[in-house]
Image 1 (cartoon, rainbow, N blue to C red):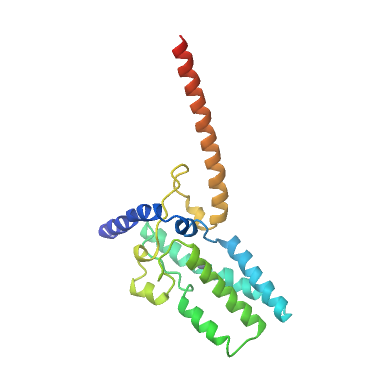
Image 2: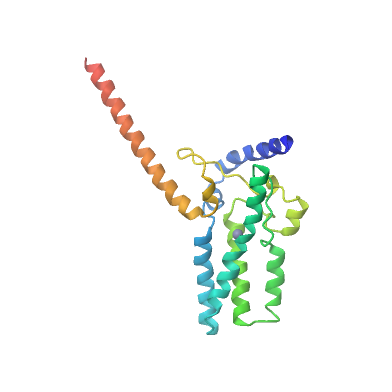
Length: 211
Ligand SMILES: [Zn+2]
């Protein structure tokens, strides 16, 4: 247990250095990740596109079911997280490029509008998670996660906390979009307070210099 934590810490301390030089890549990875709100928006867009192309309105709920509800598999990760006391594993069984390949291949055989929407909703979810989450290139291959025994240090990068606002609260994992808004407001308030305090200090020192 202790050595596990040390290994996680060692690997995670590498991140800020790597991320610091990441530029646009760092901006994309992690900070733009989609929560339920983002996945609902993307899946709705996919569903509406299939609806317009095929004339079947059930494409919308079909894309929503697969594009949003696959994140239900995080529940297992959260239970494990609470049980272990830290993020030891990344399991997310339903997130798998292998399944993307199988489903896309099956579209060649069966192309009912509801099935097409459901497949594209799922594929859209995995693509955005792959591109935007703080993960490594092989993370979303289920076989790779099994190979790494679901160990978080091989699969998930810890994003350094905002130096002004501090670490994200646990609930930020549920809906990062809301956390981004809260963080932005907090940061603005902290910077404003600091500025006001700085002005007060400058005025005080000017007054004492004039004494
Ligand atoms: Zn996901």
